[in-house]
Each structure stands twice: as structure tokens, then as C-alpha cells.
Length: 270
Ligand code: KIV
Image (cartoon, rainbow, N blue to C red; front, side, top):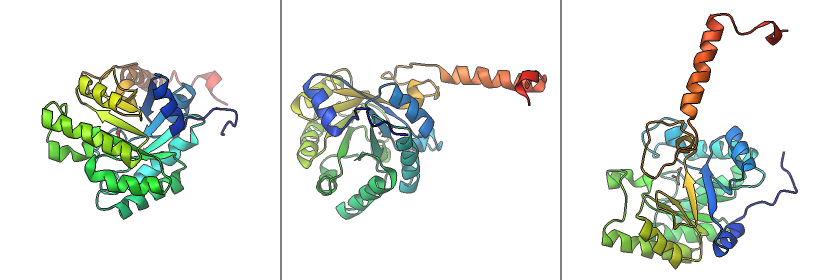
């Protein structure tokens, strides 16, 4: 299904986009059908996020999703992609214990999915694992700010790094991740001016979610921006469609048509 003439997005492309002041568009995807639509629509980076734990599996947090489940979602997404860079989240518990375990998890993702990169959460504490994974030739995207795998440490999903101490740590962590070999960093739910300072201090691109307009790119969860998940209404979210409403109306109509025997009609049968 792959089209050889399509110019694929690589980690190098993202670097060049930052240097040229061109913004990066990233979106989550978890299956073949949506990945195919998003790829054709021009998305630069598709993130197989561990938010699959929430939006696909219905868990309250990202913690329960397993490496096998992430690998399944990533395999589905990769089959739908011609152009986008596919980034796969390492789920909670698959990289925090030590760099050997982190590398083994990253290798499984790369070998079994055909994805192009992994993403993991954390600053200083993740540096040794990042170095080990990068040394093995696997591109790593970092993730700072609100890191949902640490939700029980934070206690809430509110904006991070509003206080000076946490902001200073985040700035140091961003530089450490760049030095460790990350090719990009997600900044989640931090003040816009802090994200600006971090973005300007780095050579590698920052991708923001709830981190304002100065990041080098933006990422949203597909179910949120398409209006499938209607309960989630943070200030940073812009809804580009109201699919919950449209799907509900379509399905209600279908139920009516089946009940009234309007569907199928003579043209819709053999
Ligand atoms: O899992 C995810 O969807 C993410 C994004 C929120 C950046 O990590």
C-alpha cells in the first residue's frame, strides 16, 4: 500500500522545519482507518499515544495500557501511513526501572510495529534510558510538563510549572533531554511564556499540547479535536468537528430506518 514517490517525514525533516520556522502538526492515532485519513490530510507526525488507554480502552488513566496493546495499536497505524512520522509511546512500567528494560521495550516497539520512533515521559530521571535507546539507533521524543503517567504523583491534571522551582527544573530537563539525544520534546500543559523560553533555548523542536503558541509544533488527541469525546473541555482544546453529534444522529436514523423497515429498500438488496 506504500507509495514510493511520497516524501516521508523524518526526524531530520522536523529539525529542518524548526530551523525554517515552519510549524509541525502532530495528532494521535490508534488504528488503520484514521491513520490513513490523517496521513493523507497532511499530518506530519502521528502519535500512537498511551492515551489509547483512555480513549480506546476506557480507562481513567494512561497507566493500565500494556506494551503488547501499544504494539497492536502501532501496527494498525503503521499500515495506514505513507508519509507521516509514526511515534509510539512507551507505556508506564516499560522503561522506568532501568535503561536495559527501557531499551528492550523500545526494541520491541521498533521490531514489531514498523514505527519510526518512541516517546517516553520524564526529565533527568529518564536521561540514562534515553541515551541507551538513542545509542541503539532508535529516535526518542521526550515529554515534559504534565506527564500523565505520573498523575498519582501530581494529584491533578492542572497546569504544571507555574511555580519558579518547577519551571527551572523543566528548563534544565529540556536541555538534558536534548543533550541525551532526543530529537523533539512534547511540552504538555505549561505556561505559554515558559514554553517560549524552552523552545528558544533548544535546537530541537518542541511540540505543545496546552503549552501555547510559541512551540515549534502542536499535538492534540484525535478524539478531543474531532469532538468524539465530549466530556473533555480544557481551555487549550479547539474542536474541529462535532463527530459525537453527527455519529449519534446517523446511528439514531439507522435505528429508526431498521425499525420502520425503510432500510434496506429494493435497491439495497440482491
Ligand atoms: O498519549 C498521548 O496522547 C500523548 C499526548 C497527549 C501528547 O502523550
